[in-house]
Image: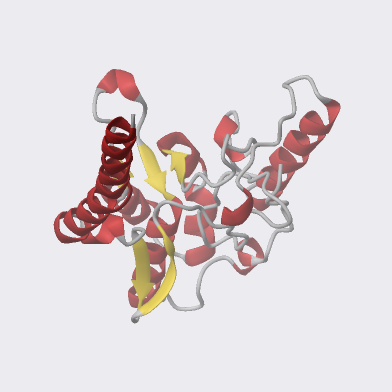
Amino acid sequence: MMHDLKAATILLLFLAALTGLVYPLAMTGIGREVFPARAGGSLMRVGGRVVGSRLIGQYFRGNGYFWSRPSATAPVPYNADGSSPSNLSPDNPVLLRHVGARVKALRAADPGARGRVPVDLVTSSGSGLDPDISLAAARYQLDRVAACTGIAKSRLQALLARYTSRPFAAFMGEPVVNVLAVNLALDRLRARHRPPGGGARGMCRRTPVSGRM
């Protein structure tokens, strides 16, 4: 009996050390060597300063930027400590009211926009932290960003093409654009471009649009 108890205890301690210490440390070390950026949180830096992560969305309000999809996290949008969906059903009047307000804000920011507003611009993701929008959602905003920044629409289309991630297989998703990455690239492009007088001033005002939904 004592022999069996001793053997079981030794085996338990061995497996606990192997799976609880050795394996995690080994995987962490390998991850940092092979995928240093991803293991470190896929952080993005500007001038050596961390400005965000490719994995967690941010809320953009300026008309000269591509807008992210709404976020339902509390107490602020894109709160990584409180990942959550809105849990509102499609026929919930609160959700319908939020969607209507978001559509209204998008229309107000770009009265010339035509066609349906892409659904990911008016509804939040399941996590509330989605860093990407669909390529259709990014293209929908092209006219507004071009008018505000004064950058030719063709150049912005080329920018989107560079920052569009394609699905691993055609049936496993759709092309998406990382909003933080493309907006940082837009800042760099705008710094080089700087057209005389800037973009259309009226289009560049800050549009009050809720980031939560």
